[in-house]
Length: 328
Image 1 (cartoon, rainbow, N blue to C red):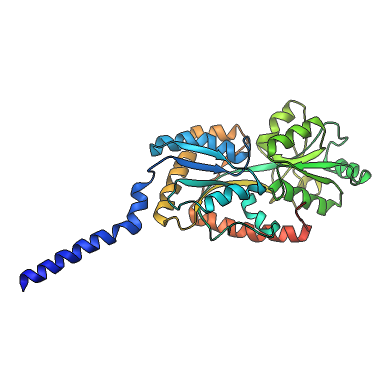
Image 2 (cartoon, rainbow, N blue to C red):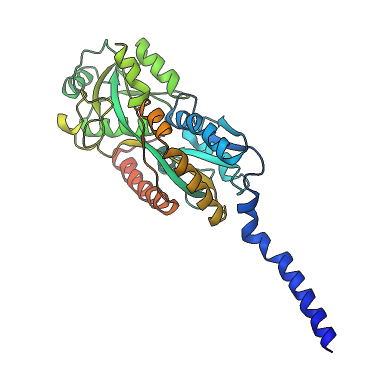
């Protein structure tokens, strides 16, 4: 009898040991088991691309696995985001998201993913202010003269963006709604082509992050008229804010950058990823590299990023409705 009880106990212990560890411990112990892909949903030279390429070698050294930056531009970031939403929730495919992630759900009638259910927020990484730039041929030196010039030429001026539904698109449509100007939208497949045509005069104006526009302003190829935010950018201190120039709706129009994992990624793996990304972003070397690009490191916990995403989804839904923004 005692022998039978001992046998049953041994069998039960063996069965339990086979069943229990695989649910929670496996993802944390097997990551990373192969190269990790950082999916950038925009073209090269975009803010998320710059961040990814700066931190990828640091993450690779930390993880002992290659970290590959994969640019998947298209549909205002939706193509790259969809790739991550449908990837295995094992930490090996991650999204380098920007705040367009919270904008497109209000603009596209059909979304290929749910911005909340299909993703596991990992960490906020950095922030950047937007600057409003014009071609030097535009006879405007501030927002007052720009608005006056646009009203003198309704429908004859163009503005560029890196694509429909991007933060730059929403920012300009919000500005149009506030000032009553009529400027035609010209969407590009990425920021590089938009900036090139702005400098060439094919388009007259656009919003862009300070880091992407500053070198061209220093070279005299564009003119900077205003920055978003409540205070001036430390990277362009001579450029006044919109609020300083009497336009009080542009404070919240900026860019944040974050990393997202596929939904259903185990919480302990999300916590591991958060620790690793925050550690890499906290190094002085990375901070200095990003600062040279006009990016300020701003990290967060997964829960804080999740709250930011939900707040911005609601905020941009209101902006889209108020400005009556629709895709071309």
